[in-house]
Image (cartoon, rainbow, N blue to C red; front, top):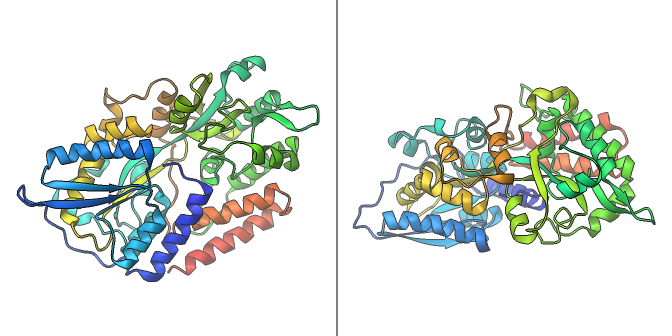
Length: 441
């Protein structure tokens, strides 16, 4: 669930490989029958999970096996989009594939790499309204649903309560102007001028400072009504990059580069927020699990992400994304695979179990209301963020998250001084995104 720059880049390469080597989205296999109670079936399930996260998934899979003792499940973790695409191309696909990159859905649906689920949904009368609208949006491409949602992420502001108290701050910022002011107040410089404590790191690409997380907070639109890239025409993007540049100039790009290079890895115990070297950061609900296990004594709080000053009515919302699960092309036991997918994605008990185990948001309204859901304390704000009517998801495109990589590449050049003409740079990025999409038609 923890999307990263590296993961998005790898996923783009994987889905482009699928496009080159797979069939078309018009390839719609028939609906497989569920196995009878006397039919012995072994389902292979691939996921990107490992260690404790894989154990949480396996616990949910065991619940399905208890209900269907004739179906044995072989769970294989650490399987990313690249491995899934290779298996599809090679004819060795698993029965069920769980991808942590919902941005890949457009390509999976378009190429037929994931089978169209419409027949199963219609046959079993699955009510898709049980999923929040943002979730439905990121699990469908061009009216084709080739995957189901399996837990989601929403994003919020993490802040260090001890550092806030020392700086005389009593509440987390709600606007970007307030965030910049608080960041400056919280920042501490060493005698040599280097950054000892960063109030907020404005470097895009660092930790979960992703363009998809930042964009909604500024009202930055990805596409216009014609489906064309709108980085240069949507005012939110200009506002985002100007705000980012102003805070970067406060620190200087050179000092930020040195600070981020020395910061601990994102998911390691020496993560700079967890060690008190960053006072505020943007991150998903899953971060609470890492703090609980890696920095249990950290005094911190969570709140909605700040928004641009003219977007106060959208405060409390964020980008929403998550895992998708589908039946790959060539799966040997498609009928049984669907029964497992339906169990994992529509039944409350396994969803709540997974949500509690992975510290991710469940993807049905009933699971969100379950008294067994342990989303209290610093997890509680994410429930409201997730269900906020202004929360949104990324557009699905036939080349996956290629537009994200192009936008991030521009952002890196912008914040390091490699691009000085913002308007021209955004137009150039628009052209590249549109040209890349045109190749998929």
